[in-house]
Length: 64
Image (cartoon, rainbow, N blue to C red; front, side, top):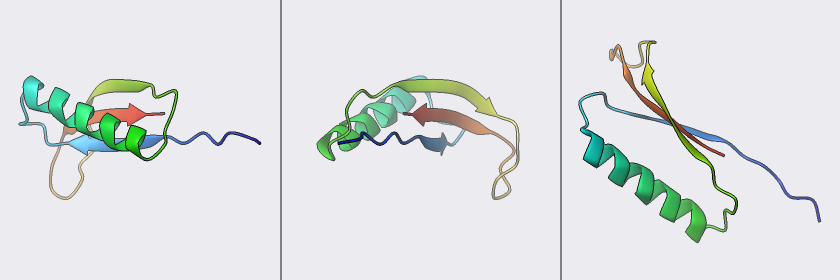
């Protein structure tokens, strides 16, 4: 059976502190693992420079 690879991108408000950001990443990782995800690779990509819904920046994290 062929394994499917997916990538998830999520953006967290820029005013969220480092501790809360790490907690959010941990919660997402736990959720994905509960849904059967394996071989998770999480990367904190830093700040987003494009406006989304009147916000000029955010913290970008990807999971694959």
